[in-house]
Image (cartoon, rainbow, N blue to C red; front, top):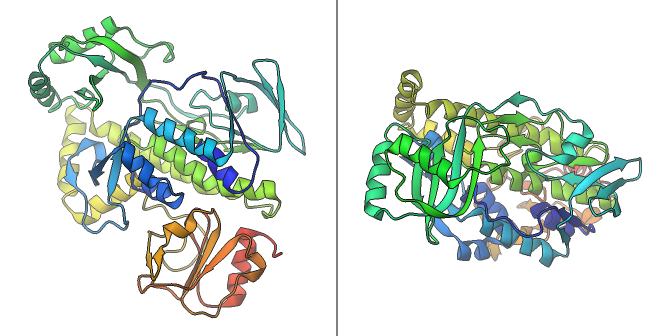
Length: 461
């Protein structure tokens, strides 16, 4: 849904094909990290998300080790938004529809073929759709990825957890005290209020299921709660039940011809750190303007290739980060010793900042070649003399922030806006921002600016 809206912002005609007739009730993700919050503001969505969620101050969350956030995080939004995935899904679907994307529910993709000019998609209802490009955003068991024959190497699941939302007869105070005691040694166990009635339960399973798509039974959930906590808290009336595991995989490539992958179709990992949904939203934010430029005809031939070049290393880093956290939540003596060491290391601001920026995705720097900071990084929101930077990014165009007053973007004015209303917060003579907010050039020379305008925004008019 995020990708659909981004493509519409660039003028592309978009069809979203969704196999589920109705939105899922399943809640895997519980919030949005700092970089995703910034993305929402860059597209004018932040207020509606804040109205539907709960703002929580940013804090260290590496492997569940509680630490305050490092001082002076480089963002105007030092918080995360707590909200169930169902709400995030609904708001993004509304955004996609408002943007003009067509959404067809209850119809799965069954096959595809492609040629030099486009992609032909066969749908389960027997109809066919012709498009210029196709993006598979269809999850870890992606049909699109399998049809393309793209490998998905990594580690198979070794551990599984049962997850669900239920009612409980035990007193809330008793549940809280018991859970606090269990979590002193078993961080894979948790029972907490959903915030909208009932309890969210996560408990380690006895073994990895043969088919993760088959949900556990209430009795299976009860048995595992008793085995670990000595009680099932009287759980009953499940709203939904599911299972997840620690399988960790990364697609060998993100593109085959005119078909691309995004989100969990390109990478899967356990939910430690809560980065999965955020990673998918940020994939879409990177891909949307580039694919839109290809459809519009002004992208250079190599622009679309930068999607995989930039986002696949980010996913690989997230996978390593979750692997490390998975070790640190083990109950074995060795990992617990390392965990105690990490708890001490996180008291150093530099260590805490390094890991916090990884989890919140504010530390990402794309490789744009040699150059000064913040080349390759996203620019935080800046106050201007008459407004804010992120308010100017809502049209999905590039921005030249020019303090010199001597630079021009006229031949690219349909793709890049010029901003001279600068404050003293920009520590550079001029910077060129891509539509995703990353700094593509820093300097004061029109000749080199023109070279970078051509690289990122195609030929001049």
